[in-house]
Image 1 (cartoon, rainbow, N blue to C red):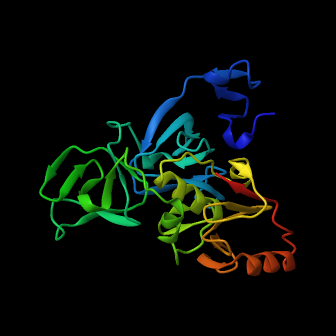
Image 2: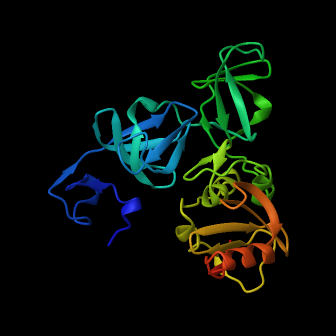
Length: 273
């Protein structure tokens, strides 16, 4: 059976691209939309109180299957996750992105001046299309950005572990993948995105990446049932976790002992990308 997290279908309706793959009473054409706000939740159900499964960042595409009562049901194009998004947070796709936010977070301003009113606070890996320049500022549909906080889309970071370290102290946020809050797999995903690598959303999906290793080192991933971390060096990990409610660095041995004590079991895999 296809993974329902990654399958654009519900209530007997499926994307036309799934005809002959997923049983459905009706196959429909989808509509491509784009996140037009700094971030928005992708939820399990069409309600602001429903569980957040993922997030869309500014400029990311969302394939809409159905829309009703202010909610769009569809699939995030970047990581494939399916769920409900506030339809007001979506707009018509603009030009293809030329830049991405490289700073942990940055303001988009209403004019090319740091004294102008901010339009929004944008997180690392938001996608932007440059429309013009004025001095050190780049104009986009999200506002004017200080150029030093952006990078061209084809210039990824060299070290995804160093990117993960930039999130130290960020609050833990279930289903989050923005600089204001993110969960364990969200941190892994965002660090890899910044380094130009694709990455699925959930820890069990990420555990299929790379190759198994017995002795982990810097850059290897560590997995437990429902949790993911990154080796910062031969002994320490960096991870977003609910125990500290933040992104922290701690010895792998300490995390293993604590998770074992809390009935989370032993690490299920060490993977090298």
